Image 1 (tube, rainbow, N blue to C red):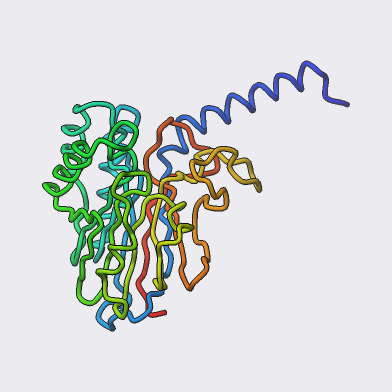
Image 2: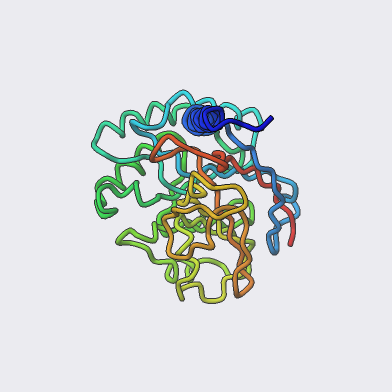
Length: 278
């Protein structure tokens, strides 16, 4: 017996309603703990097998639940990671209220046994990504929570050099100068929020991994198709690992937070890397 038109419409409406509920209420908080090997050229023997956890795009603010973020932090704390990094967008800045909220949320932030580092994302620079006073305040709150915020700076931890860049859309993006201040022979990881930055002619002779975020993976993606909306020029940069020219590699974390509470086929992500020698 064939499916009647009325029954077909009922099933279609039910399916649409269930999908909408899933995308609104379930997937935005269904964290994917992604475990990957991260091969680093010249990695000291002492750091082989160590864990490097990447968070991105927390978007602390009115649209992301504080307890959800704290629960994510507690999950990582139980792993006792060696390194913890945030690749930008601590807040969705609207006004100064986010600073107090950020302080409360980050009170639960997991500390790496060897280092806890961060960079800023475009939303951490306030309106139009240009309010340096907002960026300074976000940096201060993160520092008080135990994170070392790298703003065009280089940090060496037991022979692993971590380069942290200001955001690509900020007034202070300057990778060429920052990389010039790093040791080209040292094992190196670069933290850079916006993936579009990797296509700029500023990387000189850097060969290695660049860890970023910014895209949220598009937040909603039809099965087997790319996300229809993604905030980068190079639409190839959605989420995950990408091989680049010049011996460089890019990893894009899908982020924990959201600008709209909806995700479909793009679960929020915490990346747990195992450091290895390239």
